[in-house]
View (cartoon, rainbow, N blue to C red):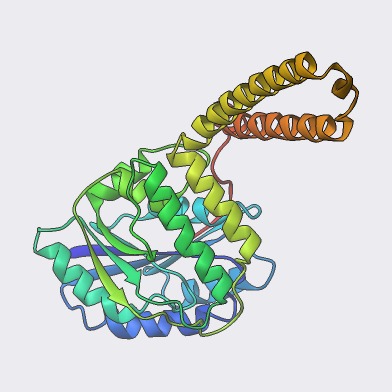
Amino acid sequence: MKKLSIVVPCYNEAEALPLFYPAVEKVVQEMKDVDVEYWLVNDGSSDDTLGEMRKLHAQAPERVHYVSFSRNFGKEAGLYAGLEAATGDYVVVMDADLQDPPSFLPRMYAELQSGEYDCIGTRRTDRTGEAKFKSFLSDQFYKVINRISNTNIVPGTRDYRMMTRQMVDAVLSMKEYNRFSKGIFSWVGFKTKYLDYHNVERVAGETDWNTWQLFKYAMDGISDFSQAPLSLAIWLGISAALLSVLGIFFVIIRWLLNPASSVFGWASLVCIMLFLGGMQLLCIGIVGKYIGRIYLQVKHRPIYIVKEKQ
């Protein structure tokens, strides 16, 4: 009998967990040829998420396990901790809010059992219920990152996916501190099939991902899987230098043709100085972003710290 590990990163999901577990159990009970274990990861929640995990563990101590962090380390750390703890032949990552339909689990498992694929992922075909501006930014992010990165990230994909043990081990072998799982899942390769579905709203609670957090997450993904911003800084510097040279020639020629005109132009000079200074700061900021990520990586800090585990 094969073993399936269900990894569930959680942050402030006290309202959703009591609904999540019976909904998933109803589905997996129909999968007669598989042994199931749950790994719930509490990412430093400020509500009673840990208490709900303890209750579920008390109901089925051999089946439901949990890991609780010492503080909030972020969803990526929670996902990584769950993958490390999972012992199954197959591992599925799900959210506790039931936006990832549990009904897909038997189909995912059957597809992997065929041996044709190493991963069965999911992809939303629409974003019904989400703010239009947030959906627009998300669509643009996928267009941008797929243009500037060698790693192709399928638009609309969710972290909800079932993977073979071989693929999970490949993901865990990437020890980088700053993690962007959508990119990592694509970068490690392996044959993946995507199942499409319409967006499902949360069953309880509220999302902790606002537009600003998603924007920062997108910027992390770009800096993790593309060097295009560094190239942009180089080309901005070259363009600014060429414009400056052209400006110098213009000033010299104007002085030769009309010496009296050289006393004018202070306002335009200030604007040019501000423009060049702004570009310099932009380029320094881009380079600093990459250096900062290197700095965090070479310190070899742990991706997460466990306070309680059962």
